[in-house]
Image 1 (spheres, rainbow, N blue to C red):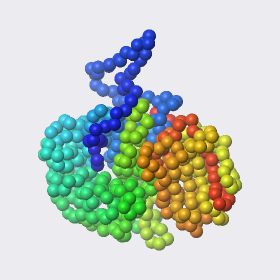
Image 2 (tube, helix red, strand yellow):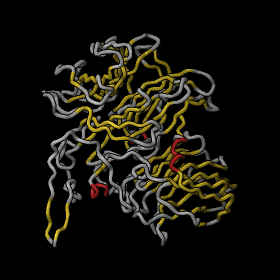
Image 3 (tube, one colour):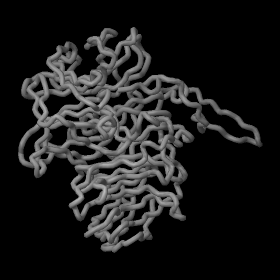
Image 4 (tube, rainbow, N blue to C red):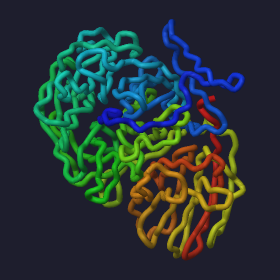
Amino acid sequence: MKEAFTHAPRIWTVCSFLGLFLITGAVVLLLTLATEEEEPAQTEVVDDSYRANYHFTSPDHWKNDPQRPIYFNGEYHYYYLYNGDYPDGNGTEWRHATSEDLVQWEDEGVAIPKYTNENGDPWSGSVVVDTDNTAGFGKDAVVAVLTQPSADGDQEQYLWHSTDDGQNFTSYSDEPVLENPGTEAFRDPKITWDDQSEKWVMLMAEETKVGFYESDNLKDWSYTGGFQTDDIGLIECPDLYMMRADDGSVKWVLGVSANGKAIDKPNTYAYWVGDFNGNEFFPDHEEPEWLDYGFDWYGGVTFEDGESEDKLNHRYALAWMNNWKYADETPTMAEGFNGLDSIVRQIELKKSENEKYYLTSQPKEELDQLTSSVDSFERIEVDGSETLEATGTAYQLEADISWDDLENTGLRLRESEDQSRHIDVGISPEKQYSYVNRSSTEQPDKDHELIESQAPFDENQKEVHLKVLVDKTSVEVFIDDGKVAHSNQAFPPLEDEGITLFSEGGEAIFKNIEIKHYDSINE
């Protein structure tokens, strides 16, 4: 995917990364020269910090694309694009973190450094565990194939490998394992093992086409076919996997990060359900579905549950919570970091009443281990607004809402004491959409174009279940069974903690309200 940043960065006033102290009114800059092996970063959090409580954040400087996590030796290994020179320098490298539960994370430092060969900095790709030693680096070697811009500027694919359980990678060759076929955008390789044909399959993002390639050794690749997309812009970060639907059918899912603005669709993760014959993908329907309708769920990856014997009945997914339109418009840079991931969600494949397959999303239940306290409200009738006694900046809120006839209903979250600032999560039966509106608080789009995310809602529906994850700088909404999700950044003042229920044009009944307040994973 797109490298972090190739244009001249904005100038930020950043809290010193090395330490700035006042001594008798004079400012003394303390420089620490590293003479020993670098230790994993320790995230410093203070009460007035914008660092998310329970979302994964960059330890410092910058992060963007997640790489698909892999599971081995009892842990998930997660790599992501990191720029330790941001905002004063360019180029990304692969930083590494590990987790046993996909909630608590341990920083492992940089695994694939940038600018170590003539082919430039590492961009997005994918990593696999070569259990059968097909590449010849040894059984269970960790192999990454990723995009580098190459010495002559072409986007080409290079192989890196690790024999120390994914901690450090070595470049296999200065020559690409897959050369550019003559297209400007040729990036983000995604590799999977196809049990049916017993070969490695690689997807490539080729402008508006997904290219399919095959190999038996991860080094030599040949083209097998392509899937052309329409009206969703330049595609990135392709994805391919099998899932078993709730009707027992086994289907293939093809996903891409895309911009559907031209067809009034999101700029997130588009997907098609269909069949893959080992060479090409054939969708059941021409138009894609969308895994998220918010503004900030990009570069999404899905991956297997490493602890489940059944690999087909569900998967996990996460994405970079940002948008290239305003990627560096974040107040967190005052604390020396810019980079937030969505929570890890569980996805399942279901079949609708009209015989169409779709993915659902739900937060992983392991988040509940962070619960410090719970507020509950059994039933509240609302005709206008009702402010709850419960407050907070980091929690999960669930509620059932029902109505007979109304225009609009929902929640005002992160509300200021005078109620002038808030983030609105709601349902408009009259306008036939669900939405998240961040116009009444601090948010990153200075052009005020990406203010309210919307998703279709059946006007005949008279009830809805909302599950909302609120953190210091984000709101993620899951509607009913999770067929619809909204993920959005926002930056309310940290003192804004109010929660208000509202209805317009009729009465709404809120039942089974439960608010689980979450502790921080950074302490």
